[in-house]
Length: 86
Image (cartoon, rainbow, N blue to C red; front, side):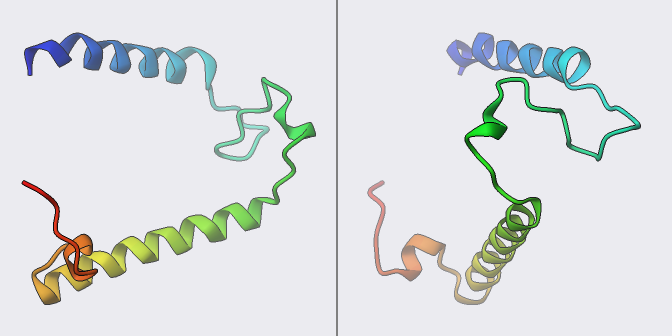
């Protein structure tokens, strides 16, 4: 809708500024390693391989939902026997 356009524009500008100014690539760092600007690394110690495996499992789960939808013609909610109002 027209009311959403200023919000979408603000999100695009904000994320563009983050990409161009704050999150710059550094040849000395791994891809995606932007440091720890808020010092969360001290309290959240998660191994990198654990996070990568979670991401891979999530991608496979979504792929499974897509395949099931193509085979059955029902979306994930309908396959559970639930009906969305609408």
